[in-house]
Image 1: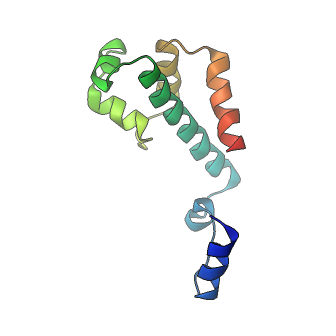
Image 2 (image 1 turned 30 degrees about the vertical axis):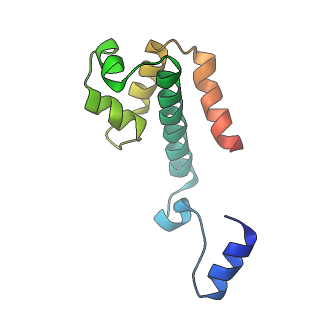
Image 3 (image 1 turned 30 degrees about the horizontal axis):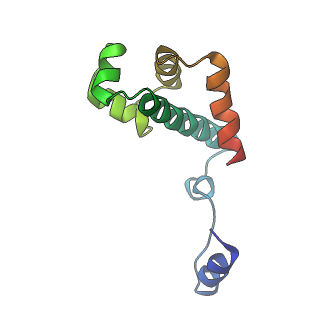
Amino acid sequence: MNKKKIAKLEKSGWKVGTAADFLNLTPEEAAYVEMKLALAEQLQKQRKRKHLTQHQLARLIHSSQSRVAKMERNDPTVSIDLLVKTLLALGSSPKDVAKAFSFREAA
């Protein structure tokens, strides 16, 4: 959010902060959320890059389309383990998976 908008909101009595502030997350919890988001984004990009539908990916990993949709939208029931395994099944290397984390931090 740009500084002008923040100043305007604060002048109107609003408090501006991060989602981690709002949810009172510890630094570890915030990092975990960011890691899962990075993996979910990478999964969707990789699936689309391979021109696969969610249904096709689901068949590849012996799962369901709804589970793939949950993975891509970072549903809390989806583990980091499942996201990593799915990325590897799509042909990502461990190095590619690690890059997803560093890219998210820079954003």
